[in-house]
Image (cartoon, rainbow, N blue to C red; front, side, top):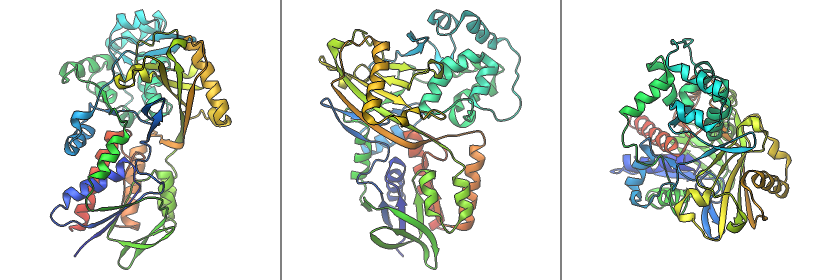
Length: 461
């Protein structure tokens, strides 16, 4: 008997579910239908033309220190196509000036004392305070903690606020004093739990690590949409439908009923919901217990402003990949990627391209600006930091409202409760994606693979 599977959401998570299902059911393909609300697949992976280059409007790379992105690229036959950043050098803004990040930094944690001291990012006393981590006794409180709690107790507040929060907070558009350590920075948690010293633990990890020369991030000359477009092109048994807005997922005598605007109801043996939690909760009108749990996952809003200048108008040599901005600086921007320096395929003798991020948890000031005034404000901040003499010649704003789930302390327990409640109320429904068990492209691919295997086990019971 042919099985019917519906996937809701055409981002990297939903596409990964479809791809893995086709592999798992290779000998007996089910009917797989993927429904995407927007007019294009890809979700938050979006690439468009800017100053003659294909430049991403959100994530512009994926992490290579975990295997799932690289493995998928190998399966798709595009592993030879990716590229790595041209520079690993980066900066942080301190009192309105740029300071180069010190050598030996791991997720914002300094592991080389002299390099930290020479960077002048923190005061000499704060650098000494951080160095004392190596001899201080283990003071773990014995329970789960946030990123900020670990860094403040081992290295001090200035390291937390000027190095770790700008880096990890920028990646997650969050506040590291609220973000769960084990979920957001498991590398730091492992180092701290396996050693009394966080710094020594990270040094031990580095000594046991693999190829230190290999790039940490990779992308494609065509932008990250190359990955999602290739993934879709290799789906052979999946009916991908765009411009379809799902309204509900309900129990039915024959399994599950998926209702959507503009198309007949679809009966399914299994449904995978690969949309953000704040979108997914709209599908569960018949199960308020699931809605109440999903609504406990909070989100932050961000915008990415791509802005281009004539190279002759930039006095700063831009020798690096970009800069981070601590909250204490009071600026609207949280980070700026020097895209035309970061990526070798964007090198242009005539133009410079910046990708500026604004917005994070607890800071929605950018929402008060319309597009024109937001670009002007960001341009003014860039002008002061990077010695820009001329006006920008092109700009683009990509707004991402309620787009970054916040993994606060207790998030994993909450997600476990959501999964348990869905198994009780709507057996055959599975959730996946960045809201739940991992942010970033590789983590979404992993979760898509896991959801596909869970569906396979469920249908083969």
